[in-house]
Image 1 (cartoon, one colour):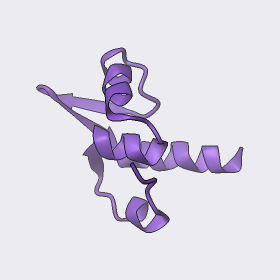
Image 2: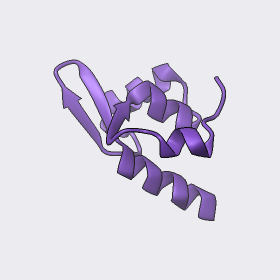
Image 3: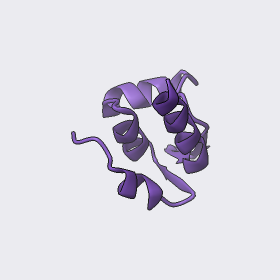
Image 4: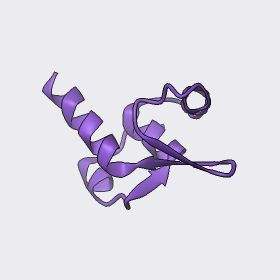
Length: 69
């Protein structure tokens, strides 16, 4: 899986899929769902039925902190 470009990250809607967030963070799909089920995903997750949505603003905040480190 290719990492996301800055342009792709900037174009994300208000919430995104867990797969997209996992790609941005360099996580695999299985690991991302595992972390979400365990309430350990590093970004805010909204669960709607069986669907997980990741708050894009939180994802951006996390990625900017990683960029500073």
